[in-house]
Image 1 (tube, rainbow, N blue to C red):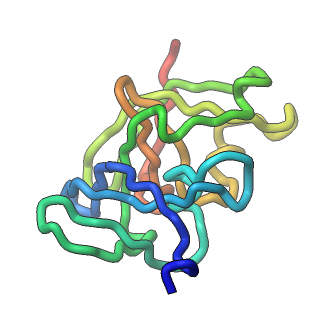
Image 2 (image 1 turned 180 degrees about the vertical axis):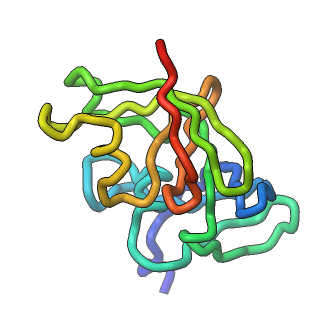
Length: 156
């Protein structure tokens, strides 16, 4: 049966749950992504199929299964959530404040590639994946749109 196991990488992350509760967890990512070249990234896992994904709760030392819809934010190291396509093309970027339903606020940069006729921030926010990348000063926050109450565009 060991030959049927899918090899996974262990990736540290901080999960923010509704109400602002934070948990340090380890995510399990595949060595190869299903939708792009290279390894699976945390965003691939969060925007993937199914309602639940496994994680190791560091404080409890136990396996936990997190409901995607209940996770407000997942923070990971910038090196773990890179967008290779943006290295080849100039992305649209906006500095924003993201206000969450629990009253907290996160500030950072959203960066995305879209056709010119769909490059507005509102177009990006209204597109399908439930989580979007917010580049913070020291990490990448993967923000669940379901927990966002408003996004404020900051002047650069």
